[in-house]
Image (cartoon, rainbow, N blue to C red; front, side, top):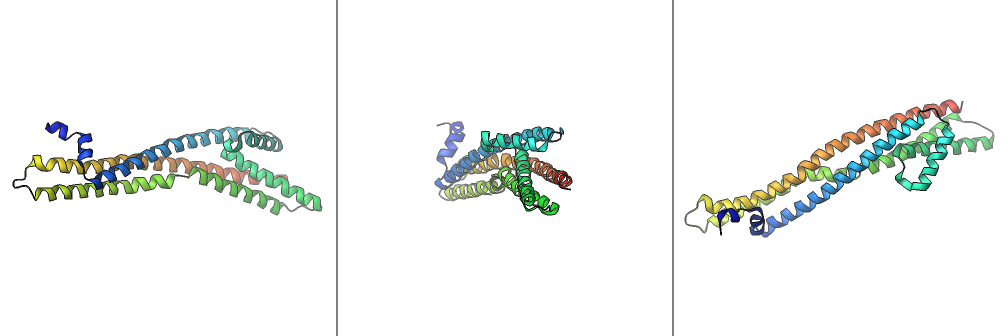
Length: 233
């Protein structure tokens, strides 16, 4: 069997020790899951950005808030949670505003502060739900990015240790005799880096995009609260 064939990736992986193979399999599984979350999160964030921009254009176009609320409610009933995050925040705040205002009207009194506080709390609760959904699986990507290199390094250390233990039974140690064992071990580190690097890049990018969306959501909540406050005076 030729040396080139002995040092091929498939041969090195198949000839590695059981523990190193388990480490490689774990890292490959983690990498597949990481790429799955990376693509899913990419589409989710892009969709959230597009829907936020569309709703902001509709909101600031000067239309009637009640008509916009009815449209948001009908959109949610038709498509469930496929409406935009900012649209759902608006719907929560406007819906609570209408309910509290109607309750005070039935009592023959008006409390602007209580009305605005109720709408703001509803929007804050909806904001937290939207942020939890956007930030889902980010912790997994962060864990993969930070832990995978060390898991791969563990497999490498174990493989190199086995390679040098094997040299104890060899009378004359040469580079050709030790190279396959070290190469087998280093593959674990390579797979660990292959899993970690995309996860770290995706985590940093998505965290930045989500922070930008959070700022837009919080700004909208404050601006919309000011608009509602002017309406109850």
